[in-house]
Image (cartoon, rainbow, N blue to C red):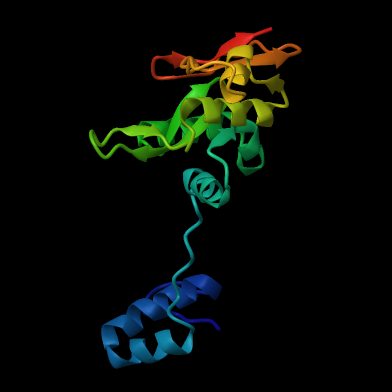
Length: 180
């Protein structure tokens, strides 16, 4: 279909549709007829931004911890890191360590973002260790408390790591303590 507006060059394809839509919109009832006829208008669907795609993937996942490598297929490393930093700045995520992020929710008291993991930081840290492929087990103090051999509640988040692991995982002022 070739349309020639008065005093212009010939239009083809998408440009012709845009020109036609513009002029039919000014006619009134014909635009309504054409928009229904063409399936809801001639709008081109907007592509999702990288942040929107990462946010959608996070919303679908069940866990509370995410690694940057989980989003590698969505874009380049720098782009993904930039998008994740923006999500941290907006309060959608919290940074737990190098390449490790946690799901965030707004605090009911202060409104500031806080870690959304049900078991707190220790649960998020254990999820991160599992995703990183690090073998770990409970510390002796945690086992003693869980087995009823001690009434002293372990407060500091700590795990016994089997093998090599050098990353630091922390949230606010709390850091995961590693035992060998």
